[in-house]
Length: 92
Image (cartoon, rainbow, N blue to C red):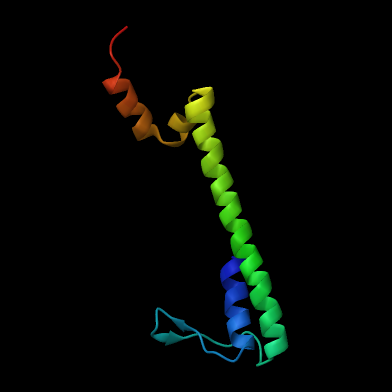
């Protein structure tokens, strides 16, 4: 919840209103303070990049298990994929 709340706080501190789905106005979390707003915006951007890096690392680890180690980790995360692979595998 930190990234969206940080963006909300930064936007409010910069003096801009926030609307939920462009219809319902949300309350201001902070009064207008541009210096604080830019600091919060920078923290929001770093948190977003960190979340993206975590997401990419998880995808990379899942692909490593599937391609390099060839174990069943990805099949346990995606049971439909594992069931499809068992159906298309030739009988041994």
